[in-house]
Image 1 (cartoon, rainbow, N blue to C red):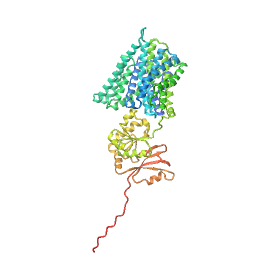
Image 2: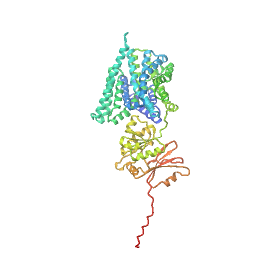
Image 3: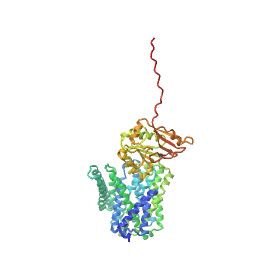
Image 4: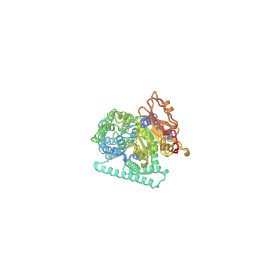
Length: 607
């Protein structure tokens, strides 16, 4: 009786969805795979959740609005700066790859799965999407070249509305009653609706960013206003033509991602909180819609269709599209394999399957088990083989051994030079171009921008860094860097300079050095002549001998282990140092040697 209550079911959906995401984060596995398992257990296995019974007529609107918000969030992550790495490849995959993938997918569905040609064409259009909700988490666990990363991300988000529009066009054609069906007229109708929807999305994006910059919307209302604008834009476009709202919300997100909004915090909360919650909930609902009668409709010939999707349709589409491009062939092969489908494919297929059934189309009911089979197969095949394939192809950059220094000043410049001399890759990040000039003169890598914004937008590969040291002149910002990056990188990789007790700040990461000096004290020491020095330990000269000979006031900063693994000394951490390790120390200047005073010249004697 407890689970008969709708409010209990809603709570259960939230617990299952967020719980699956948390477990996936802990074990470093695709979250969508665990959400799929959780939804199947809650749906067809135990019968606790039956979306058709529990939500009734609200099921479709809930799913459609959630997909709209998810695609808007995807558009927010598309910054045009990334196209300098992948612009040509993305253009090829859209202009050339979509028609090829659609044609091959249609033939596979018709000849292998045995679907009617019209339904096959509709399903082939949907399958050109490549699940950004799956690719995003997958890319966060991979260190591949920026070209590969940006190509997969842009392709996944851009192709989502394109696949939906192909399905719209095919559905319009096969559902048009009468002998005088005109493909040209139908195509013109869909194109006009698409342009209208895209224009509406661009208008909303410009309106939102302008309102934010001019202060027309208070900070606490920005996320609600954005959410309402996304839903309103989607519904307005959908009234013009079904599924064109996906174009509206995607374009709106892209416009807002590439125009200054001065509302980074609001959009960050939108991306991190609302989108994750909706992805979790909707995918639990969708996977719970399966029932045993649907699963039993899965036929042996579908296996051949799945094999064609994996080993023929995707590889041929990518390799032909990227033929004669400047992208290295190893990267092309990797992209040719990676194409997991996700929530958009399931949601759009589910919607069209219901419409095709209402229209009386034969075999329309087989689309739901077939799309779930595609999603499950591609998630497990691509999600669990991506790391191995990247290593086999030689494009995996391996475990990052770089060090990120946040804040450009005299201390971080001197520390960066010392770490570089140890053989480590060093990057100094700051928002001020002027402060980075001194760093550039030392021939260190620099990053101009707010590191928190860059990490949020995935425009910087944080996996390349084994340590992050926040050393700006703001204790609060240093603590914020450690707090925000901690869940993704691990708190053991985040260190900040000492805290000014007058400010009563509390740190979120480790505090650098055993005595925890503030950044002001460290810069004062550098100005006074303090320097960094390295000491190689051996069986004869060990850590105890090092400590005994450490000059007064000197302090160890870190230990470099074999394999370029850097461990830092902090107020709460004392890494062990053994023979073969190198210790980096921060030492005061040596005092000038003491010399005996010269004897006074004898007084001249009178002649």
